[in-house]
Image 1: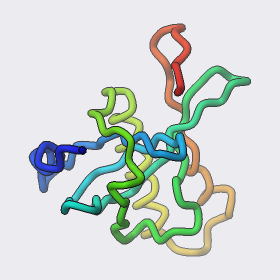
Image 2: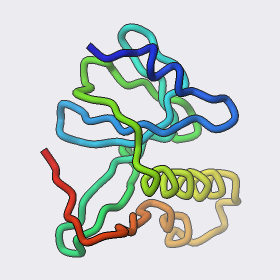
Image 3: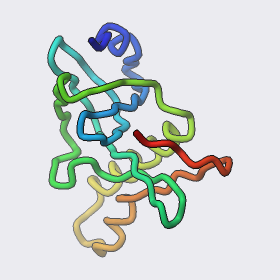
Length: 135
């Protein structure tokens, strides 16, 4: 069973700490948790951590493409295999992505589609040559 109290303790109103969730589907998402109860996580800006095997790199992308990212979302506790703290590299890139997303939501609709899609994938630069292991 997931220790929900531990996750609630990491919430800081000024700057929530991103967590990495491994889902039963095999997906890994990084997100901030605003609240939990015994069945659900209430999360903000869930991003999928993806691996590009051609480039040998990780990147972040929207987890739910059609969702309204200006609102909180729920994640069922039964869909979660594991929760862990995010590596600093993932945390830094998560905040960068969030900033770009907030900017795009507040800017006018007059911009090019290419400019608005620019934040959809942010490459996570790996500091060493280790290839990540996915299960």
